[in-house]
Amino acid sequence: MFDDLRDLYQEVILDHGRRPRHGVRLAAYDATAKGDNPMCGDRVQVWVRHEADGRIAETGFEARGCAISIASADLMAEVVGGHSDAEIRDLAGKFRNMARTGTAPDGDAAMERLRPLAGVHEYPSRVKCATLAWHALLAALDGKGDSSSE
Amino acid sequence: MNLADIRAQFPILNESVRGKQLVFLDSAASAQKPRAVIDAMVHAMEHQYANVHRGLHWMSERTTEAYEGTRDAIAALLNARDRHEVVFTGNSTGAINLVAHSYGRGILRPGQAVLISGMEHHSNIVPWQMLRDAHGIELRVAPITDAGELDMTAFEALLADRKVGLVSITHMSNVLGTYTPAARIAALAHAYGAKVLFDGSQAIVHRKIDVQALDADFYVFTGHKLYGPTGIGVLWARRALLEAMPPFMGGGDMISSVSYECSTWAELPHKFEAGTPAILESIGLNAAIGFMNSVGYDAIAAHEASLTDHALSRLAGIEGLNVIGRAQDRGGVVSFTMQGAHAHDIATLLDRQGIAVRAGQHCAEPLMRRLGLDSTARASFGIYTTHDEIDTLADTLIRVREFFA
Image 1 (cartoon, rainbow over the protein chains, first blue to last red):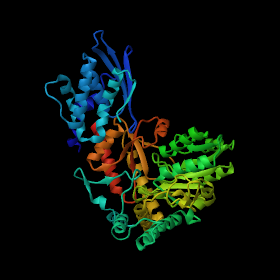
Image 2: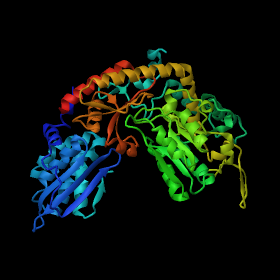
Image 3: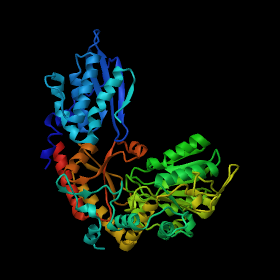
Image 4: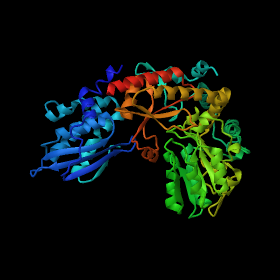
């Protein structure tokens, strides 16, 4: 019945939406921020711990939201490890672009991992579900504490 | 009532969505429009349109008659004593803001309280918060029970110190489908010296409203949920209250005379209708009321009660599905959650089958908190909804559950 929805709900999204690997509050962190989408009630908080060299050691999150928003937060937490803040800002821009247009540059390992989320571009009302965690992560890196995907 | 005949009057119901027959279960957000409404507005634009209340020419006189004719239709619909008690606004939100501004700042005194309930739409919360912060009014919230009904004991207790000057409360919850006991609420409010406003945005779509029988002081509703156009709503209030209230917005149409030193206000209801009103929308709303009257509230209520019973029974049979709210007196608005599936995911999957529901907080964030929820999916029924559509919803929800299992 929902075969044509498999573009949006790929197995990796259903899997990470059901069983996020990084859905934990970090005990030790140096940056955190909340994101919320007031229109729909989705909420996320992201915690980040950096290495001494400025690269991300670990990312965790707690979220209340749909399969797309949880899976997106989880895949984000997975791919940002080992990257500098500048690299993450670049990645976030590419991800936002992919969520809106469905296309992402080839040959980028992190973007390949995130590509299952490209399907949201066909669902304008769901793009913000996919980008919510990224908004929160960027707010954490900017030291802002709060963000919104509206 | 002949459902096939009724459906035939709504052209949009023939549309397909994503290759499927449209199943429109989002009427509580905004209802679809019957042919009579569409034709009345097009006819006005093609044959009979000018500004109202000012022209000394044929077109303006005829258009004024049409505009004022809608006021008569609304007075009759609500069983108002006096057509001058009917004020046009932009929507229910506009009507509540009018009361919050004019009655709130003009009549209520700092230290008095406004009492709302724990199941209000944001439109019946935020205007009172703004009044509270600007004018020193206390805002009280009467709690609801776990079943989603107004806690009448707590409600009365909040009136006991007689500080409440106005009770402003929904007549039917847009999330839970609960009808509030309006006549009892009005009697209690009056016993403690308070006036009462009912937000009838949902209720008037499904039930005959008699403002005299309810003993209401203010009653508000919006046109677009009543099968009419967007951009027009109604404030009904007792004449003595409207006469005592200062105007809300200043401008043309609402004045008697203007000089740089002072202006005087027009008679009711024009005192509250500054600027060129929603003329075409008033003509559409009159047609919508005519449509409602042609079907009849008894038939509408019976049809929707049957739909609601059927929906509650079908949804109860779906494992992991939880209907939110178990009020005794309820109408055709059914919110639910599903284990393992978020409301947005449910809505997206249903949409793929052509089924339109709403998902989210339904402009009722404090109520969602009270229920311990972030969001629900909501199916809401209209005059054109069929039992088959509810079966389609239920059958599809079973597949949704399998998809996320």
